[in-house]
Amino acid sequence: MAGKKVGRKPLPSHLIKRGGRRQPSDLGLEAPSVVQAAGTPPFEWLDGCAQSEWRRVMDLPLIRAIVTDLDLIALAAYCTTVSIFRRAHVEIGSLGGELTMETKGDKGQGGATINHPLIGIQRRAGNLLINIAAEFGMTAVARSTVEFADDAQDDIAANENSDDADKDAGAVVELPVLPPPDYLNDGARAEWFRVVGSAVESKVLRGGDEQAFSVYCSEVDLFISAHKELCASLLEASDHGVPYGGLLIPTKRGNWKHNPVIGTQNTSIERVLGFAQDFGLTPSARRRIKIIADPKENPYARWKRDGSVSL
Image (tube, rainbow, N blue to C red):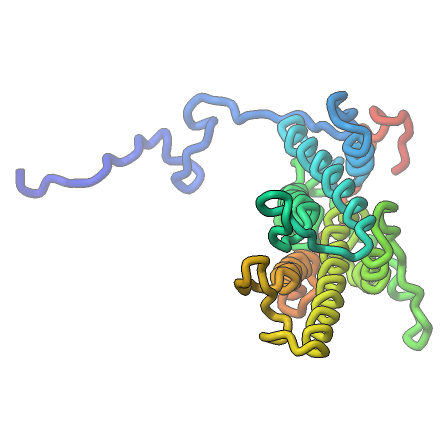
């Protein structure tokens, strides 16, 4: 038994191909095929807002190049999440800046002060929206990892810089504007317009990113609102000599608990930072972004969709 080799048996020679990796063809199998699904109409069971978002993203060059029949349920999940996020955002905007609410205790008496439940709904939907959007390359960082379909991979457009040479060095450059979704409130729209020009000009934001970017803008609005509410609370506590400077608030039973607005602000800060990293809005994140041009659409696919061909 001396000298007997131990360990896993070596692969048969007919399986050792392409660097020793097993391929479906090596085993006499065909690789799974996928069907490009560009232009597929939305599922009938989607609500109106979700169907509108479906049609919007299906018209984007990047989505047309990568979406297949395997991706349609994930895309539907993205669209329904956009719908929930939008509805929650609109309802929060109608609260008039009141981000907390009083619960009722025993026998109808006052209970605890908690964050408004709508905030949790919006944040949960926002998290899902960002995560699914990243799967389809609809954030700057995620776009660097997207694999294009075989018939589009070699046809990436590189003409986004074509007019750079025509810009005078001393001229005032008018930054392009990507319009925000119409449901964003004034605070979120203010952040949108504050950064959108530079973000589009630097190519970390483009058409298709609107819904994901709206999550960032709405969270910035929540952060600003929470900070203003916290400042007012702390100032009132200081004026009235409230213990702990307003950082803690009394309960109905005479106990003390954290001011919930502090938690709202802290959570918003964490989320704003995370979303900012997705769009290259920090120096570190920008170094990780690979700018990907929109793929040119296959002329035959365009002809099948709308009957027109332009080369």
